[in-house]
Image (cartoon, rainbow, N blue to C red):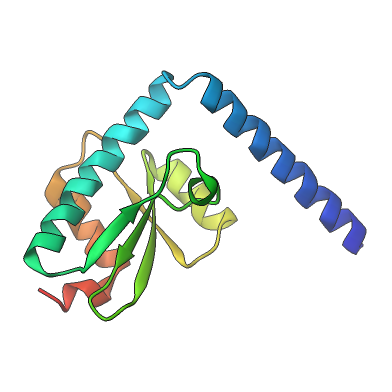
Length: 135
């Protein structure tokens, strides 16, 4: 039975690798553009939090890099050395799928063009209540 699990994992990783290669070869795809725009909106919130002293800083992972490949878009650096992992999705459907298939330590926030910055910021505080205490 363990062999079957390894086989399925290998197939999954190969599928993910092929998907990443397709994305790299077509960087102008609409989905990639919207994803980057929505990540930029979250980046603006994190910059504001850093300037306000809510967080020590953040790291935006390299697009199509190793961390992005496992579902981490941002690493938020808390004031007391704690790190928070964040994935940005453009739809509720993909956010639910991500939560079911990835490490639960990676929190998901939906950032789409129809959401206000204030609602995205509220979602971030909901996912990371420890940061709300820093206000």
